[in-house]
View 1 (tube, rainbow, N blue to C red):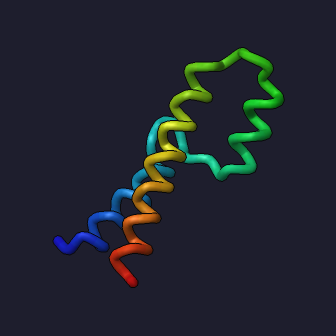
View 2: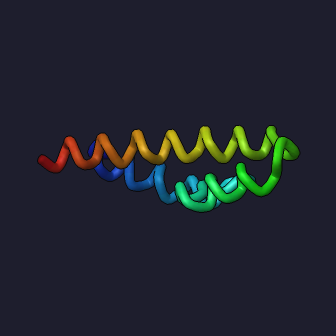
Length: 64
């Protein structure tokens, strides 16, 4: 499997997990609204978001 195909498959899987990957706007609004509760959920959403950003950056680099 080529690198770009692998990355696209990984990105697609992120929204199908137990904790879906949020957008930056959703993550910021969730963090502001929860005021310290649901920190484990917030942490997992942030991890997923960071992983998605890293994969997207690799895709951009590979395509240039």
